[in-house]
Length: 245
Image (cartoon, rainbow, N blue to C red; front, side, top):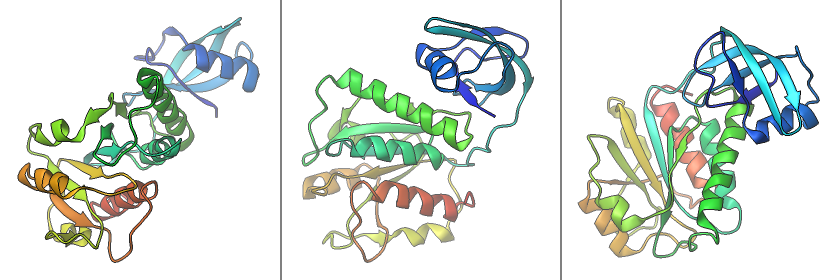
């Protein structure tokens, strides 16, 4: 069954407009016509069986029918804070993080990360579209919130509101750190944030600032992973430790 995203699909028995990109996909990629069955989700956890009502030039509407149970969300609300990577590597990380169940993504400017992309608002919109596409593919009805890029210093200094805060570090880091396996012996938190650095790693000052703000410096083991692979690996390990994989 084809899945489509519209933030307006809030209840059964309503006719809602699809966003322009979704309308284009319905009409020109999927080539669906009036009466075709689909599913729609609102990005906040609600999903419905639906049927196509109208298809026009650049627009389409669907009528919501019965509620549908989407893929189960993880018990722990996990936010990924990610240093902006080279090229389109950040896109790949956002796609994978969405599939693995994160609830929010915070792009970061760090001492060694790439500058914020040219046309930063457009980049954020592209990342949000990537998250929607990934949620459609994996069966989630929740689309992670993607915030505008922020500086690591300001982000680390913000209050943690009782969440578990993790700084992923390289195994060769001289400062004290532990394996992510130490979390297996602890009760799962209600919410957590994991921060993953850029291709060049963290500076000593950033590690110190994170530790002072209450972040746990943890590694994934003896091997150093690529910056675009480490987030998905870390999220998968955390979900396994907390019983969601």
